[in-house]
Picture 1 (cartoon, rainbow, N blue to C red):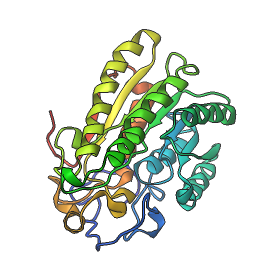
Picture 2: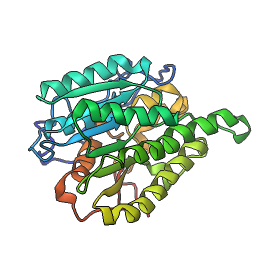
Picture 3: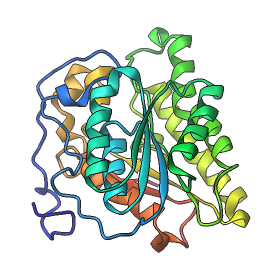
Picture 4: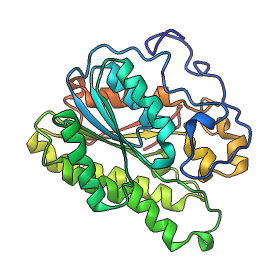
Length: 297
């Protein structure tokens, strides 16, 4: 595979993952997964679509967020990523990729489930980059629980604090810095439309993100700030090996999509690039579904 612009059969563009059953403590380390997800390190080719832009990406150390960070840097953006302490090794890898692209790369170790921390993250990112014009709310928590009786109050709240509350706090803080032409991109999920029965809290949080984003897009339109959503389908990331799916679901992870293979983070990143770039100037309040042919409303 030369780069993301090659023409080929999308069903066979990437091999099936066919992962062995594996477990890691949350939040999971991508570098220890089998196989390691493809973030586009060897394939993503930038064309200058984000030259001079300044981006903040939560969950930018691995998976979809990591692939987006690499793509943004190769398109000419400086990037700050946010991650948890246990994800430092993955974060170092992404920062190396950003700097290899000739851009400024900064990692912030922080827990986004606290409002004051989210405000501090934005301030740090602005100081590090000299401004901010792209916010990607991507970090997410997903833990599969078979029965609602076993879904604790603590987990339900923590899922929403990570996936929804942090989105709200970071966005509020960033709006003090964002100028006309800036973009906010939020990560939802296929689960917002087709909730898995063992991911009640996760799916509900992703539906909330989708709804929140569409309302916010209308509110911010007069300010010239666009808000959009990317809703990935089954994608091979550290979420799967750190309690996000059952063992049976992991073994059959490739079978969920119409393409009969799991998506790779490298395939999701171009959607974020499109929504961050001026070429999508007439797109706001949109949800771009990237899910291997799984039809959504």
